[in-house]
Each structure stands twice: as structure tokens, then as C-alpha cells.
Amino acid sequence: MDNTRDRVQAHADIAKRLQDKLMEAYEKLLDGNAMTAQDRKNLQDLLIRNGWTFDPRELPKALRDQLGDLPKFDEDLDADNRMRVMP
Image (cartoon, rainbow, N blue to C red; front, side, top):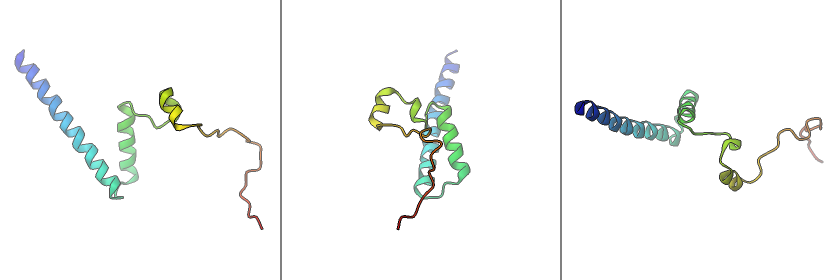
């Protein structure tokens, strides 16, 4: 039993180190402008599966308040929003 507990703890320690190395590798790719679209997708999926969110509406209210107003994309749907060149 004790051997199993030690083994599980050893695996958890290894997983923590690997997680740090993986995140550092992603950071180096991103900082070096070498990250591919697939790398970004993999990183985003990894973060989302581990509780991260990229949707400001899902953030806790205290954090949302710090962001200010969220853009309202549904306003003026019928308005003519074409770009115009002014003389």
C-alpha cells in the first residue's frame, strides 16, 4: 500500500514538472513568433480543459467589472455599417 502511495506521488510530481515544461515550451514558441495555428489550438484546448476561459462573460463579476463594458455586437443590426471615405 505504501509503495502505491509513493508511486502515485512520484507520478504527480513528474506531471507537475512536465506541465511546467510544456507551458514554458508554448511560451517560447509564442514569444519567438514560431507558434503555428495548430500549436495555438492545442494550447487553447489545453487551457480550456483545465478551467481557463477566453469568454469575458464567463469571468467572475469582480474581474468583469475591471474590464469595463463588453462590446455589444447586436446593436444596430439593421444599420448600414459600411466603411465610408470622407472627403
